[in-house]
Image (cartoon, rainbow over all chains, first blue to last red; front, side, top):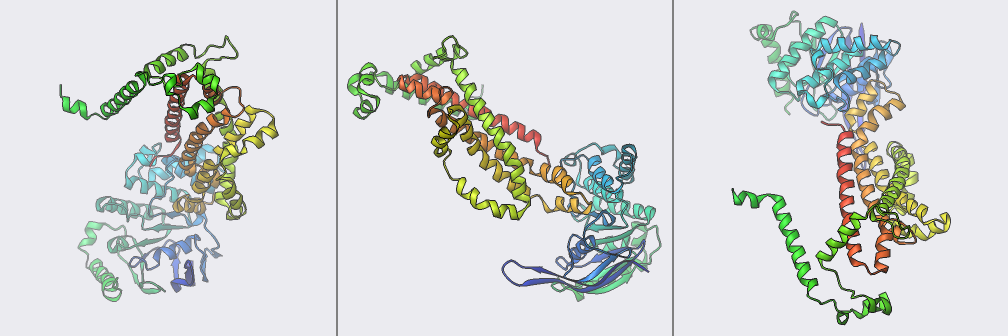
Length: 259
Length: 282
């Protein structure tokens, strides 16, 4: 039983002047409740477009997206998003950034209860010590953790992650991936994540959706990852199953879908 | 003492240029070239023969300007003679007009700028008027303003309002229309309503642009007030300069010109500081 369904969705962008650009060509996929799905593909393959369609930031030119039985007609905090560029509001402290989301979703709570929710979300990403700092005062990795805390604080039905670690250095990225593994296992939420990092996709996903190169991108292949959880990146390195998954994805990305 | 390093300091060069400028000025004006014989006939015609006969009409040397400047500053707050107020009162009068006209412009420009920036239909409807009104020299309004308001002080404030309006209006509109897409997406994803969207996202994101507009507006207003006060006003630094010109007090005029420059600089530095404090940091 799918929780999130994308049915025959096409997306064409109007180009200035004349004509249009078909980014996605009748894409269909289903995501079960509590499933972690990664969308992987080369740059410009439309994976972020698909995520923005699920978020409701874009509306498809054809097809339909349903989340928890309801058609997606616009954005909402039930599909909270972690943005590629952290997208924290620089005029607000970390606390205020998360509070903005909490206030929208839990508007009936008292001020003290909202404060607890915000602090809980920041504790989950180990940032309770920096919550009254402004974004410019903290590192890139910390900013992205606040971005994750903000999305989690909205208690979304589906958590959307748009290449959240793309702008970070390798070590920071690894530590945030580990943290995301831990968080996802503790809250068991439905997650759709866009990435172009194969190791990241295998470490985190239950299923990896591979997209063909655009224009008119489609879903090329789907790989089920049934590695046991909790997953540990060091232990996985020696796992033959992991190596097989990795090879399968590499073949898709670099033989079938050359950039 | 490292002479080379001392000479390399930027203010040393500035000071040297100033000293050379004053020295050349002194040499050119102290040689008695300003005798009646040197009177420019064109000038004599403009100033009227009587004035020309009374005065030498020469540019005063820097020493005379400095002496006059000292005199004006010592008596800056003198108000014993209502027909000859201290220069500080005139400057405060001008600053007050600038502040009032600017405040009125701010009240109109910021909300209207948001409307222009956020609603393309409003922009399309008002843009022709803005494009026609904006290039009009604010002083072109002066006679009409004098006719309507029947008061030179109010007219000057109106002129300031007109000239201060455009930079703030346009900067606010551009700032509001170009808020980073990622911040707009945050607002949409987390479901902010229209009021919160404007107050918590659009407004703080636009503050740097608005403050740039404020700086430009105040700079222009400080330009324009001098000219506006030369037409009909009975007070203010523009009136002061015009009055001293009628008295052929060139030293006073030069002192006033320098003070206008220094106050303009002070306004700009102060507004830059306020702008930096109000703007977000990244």
